[in-house]
Image (tube, rainbow, N blue to C red; front, side, top):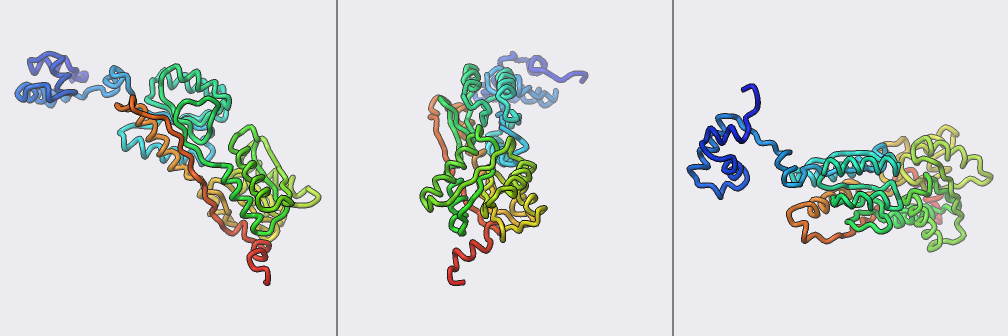
Length: 347
């Protein structure tokens, strides 16, 4: 054949109407067995394959979810994507991935494009903290689920990680190790995650020992280079902190590199705790202690909520908020001499 067979070709060969062919494809029980057999034989003879995308567009539903990540360079979102794809596959759906690069303007452009494509739903970590961009997107009546970040007035489902608790765990661990001057190294506090982790650090100090000093070293980015820069700034302080809590593992790796280059031993001279528990954390030259966020589970649960909200039973869907608790994973980077002394006061 020079072109693909269509439903009209099938109908002509089977001697039925196009509507009957459509019923065989979509509601076979509505067609008599004999007629159904003739249509199925015609389909097989012509090699007809219906256009699933056209069918779904006519029905007003897509087979594609979208993940609009805040920064795909952040391995956390790779974990979120893995979980989202797992849930999507279970529902016979695909996942389209886009990156706002932490830009509200880019986020707005991507959301317009997703609305034009009529995706089934969007998993989004908002770059626009005000929520205005998503409020505008809501007019398209496409459901969305907030992932790892809340916004004012958000009216959809949200799947979050308790970063305040995570920050508290990290600093409580350093305090328990005998550290009384601790640095918090992070990217800009405009990002809620860094703010929440700082709040948790302060809570841990207030509860454990208000005399512990917390030094904040903030940068414009949250990557390895930012960690190296923070290490240089920390080494220039008059009194160097002995414990460091980094806002993510990439910063922690940069901190480790910067201290190693300056011949500062980790954990003997400075203990480090990161955040996210990326695979590279355990593989570092000094394995990094870190706060583990269940990225894959976050993505899976968020996608399942989105599938439910955009599916056949959408009318019964109730918006929900899921908050996961992080977990402290202790490795060599935070178990130095001060930690040993704290656990064994007679040694």
